[in-house]
Length: 110
Length: 113
Image (cartoon, rainbow over all chains, first blue to last red; front, side):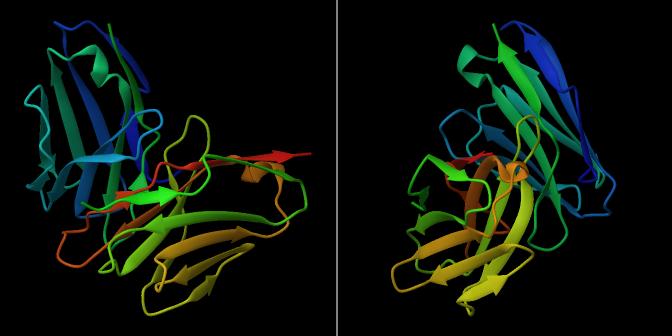
């Protein structure tokens, strides 16, 4: 185990649904990240939080809304997604430069 | 913008042989490089890293080589085992990007028993 836990592992949602992805890290790290992994594409950085403050929003559509209530928890709130948003969503944390990833949430938008 | 690419999307090797996975990067300011391994159903897992002031770094059965002249990075796996079957990603970062990494598309390594 990497010390980064993501739930749920799988999620199927309709385009009008609202859902949230959860990430928790047990490593005492100060930085947390959301990445999107689509088939045949490089990992895309979505959001970065350092000490609970958002330091990076990589031009992500507003239908994705992150929340970081403390340095151990990170959420990604989803609303009115599109089928092209179907992907594996990975959470990661870091203290220095190494990223520790969770197992991801496989999201399917119908 | 930054691009990081792997040379081959798939690679098959015989068990016991050595594997070499290659990666090219475009930003000459990149100063830190990481290789990740991603097994099916899991997130990427750190394998080995190297800074730009080094040419070579060795771990357990893995070696990373960095050629800054041609902006090329390689991962060598010695005595490849079935458990090495996975997708391998290279990633780089450069100063003042707030820990932002740029990932390649991945090479899928299949080890033939």
